[in-house]
Image 1 (cartoon, rainbow, N blue to C red):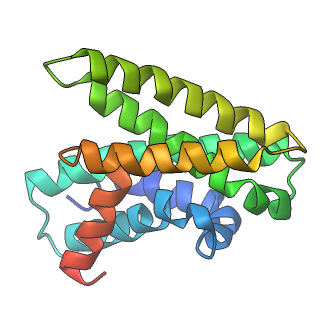
Image 2: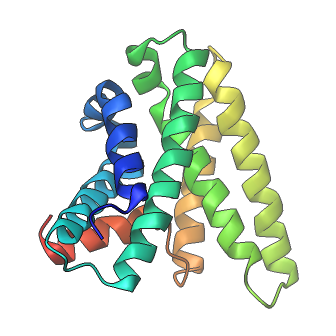
Length: 179
């Protein structure tokens, strides 16, 4: 399977974005990128040893798509900040919350039963995403609103403890395989 083109695409993509990936290694945004790169590199090495299962190929393809989407969005933010890595890091808490809330919302809407409380939570998720999005360009942040939305996010993760974010899954994968 060594000629599997997605591995070559992955290698090229990582090489093309090496500077940003290296920077993100020590960033608050680390969880959105680095565990995925480590997992995909590990799986690519399994392929070179002809030990890659069909399940692992699916994980690789899914992970590469997830990595691509996240990194491209981060590049858009970086461009918005005029390629200033310091501003990117200063705004990273907002960016990370946007990523996590968006994914949480997607997963929550997949649930079969939607009750009034869940509809309220989905509406509040939209409000939180808007707050964090507006905070990216604002010079004034209302501290108590920030704390309220952060608290809301952590309450959501406690309430819906059956929802796992992709980045958490890749972190767990790395931990399980010692990567």
